[in-house]
Length: 427
Ligand SMILES: Cc1ncc(COP(=O)(O)O)c(C=O)c1O
Image (cartoon, rainbow, N blue to C red; front, side, top):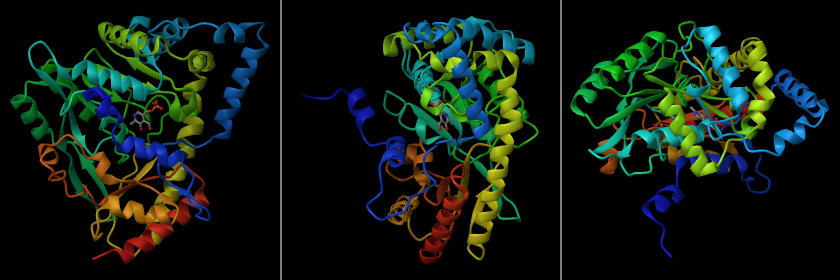
């Protein structure tokens, strides 16, 4: 028996596998868990109540529930939901779209996998790549290219501020130069807000990337899993939802309370949305119906976006502020830098005095029950890495990603332990 290249690549160790494994695997007997790892969102009571109400409505409506569970939806997704979503984005943002511009997927993770492989790998003319213009980027992309070496990236620039925060910026000249020298780039991709750093690319930065993409006749993929208008885990003022025919926008219902229901929403040119639907048919026949059914009315009436704005964003904003205060308190006196938390559910902390790589530090923390994600996994797509030299960014093996959305007391315990062990392993 021998696995194919595809089989070997997708079944080998990956950061995202470790992260999802860490979420589900119990710790050794007697070790108390402080879960700051994976990307699980918080349980938000006022959001849960709304989904319960929608489900009760469905159950009370004759045999509608049985009808929903007894049929496959179409490969591009539940038609009524696609129409509602198109109507919502058309009337709210003036986007020139219809249901044909939208495709659903079983989670935006699957959607990104499909999209990356639509635009990377061998074509009739050459081998195409995806360019990530702002590294570090989401761990969950790192191993999604089916063909080897189909991802490239540009290290982010970094500005440090006096208050121990820092922020990543696009190196626009480097992005432009790379695109000029590499006609094999088939698409560019960013997450906005960025996982892991919590950076939020401004409207202006997105416009510049989109116009570069247009210049090179490639799409800009924007992963909006934490973004606007839902779940709206965005704390800055200069970010609007953006879409045009040069942009492939990927959205998700996960961070607005439905991670287990697996619903990704792709808005793109019609031929691209259709291609996503075609891959759905081959890979999954259809997409799940429950996410669309539970949220269609909420989207139509504006309740989903109101929930995002009035409940979800303030909830995470308050949590982010508390997490930052905990970090400031416990890391006081150490050499640390915290990325400005502009959005997402993560803190990204740079520990320059660490004497060991964060991959090793992660294992030490794990023994104390503190689950984090080591930074190395968020840097990928460089020539240097392919040569075994690590990623060319000073943050490469000196950052940790912490999910701040869990229980505050456990988050604080975890942060206190990390700070204590950082002191022990500092230069
Ligand atoms: C940036 C980003 N994109 C996509 C996903 C995938 O989310 P889902 O498949 O649950 O929609 C995540 C999950 O954490 C994420 O952080």
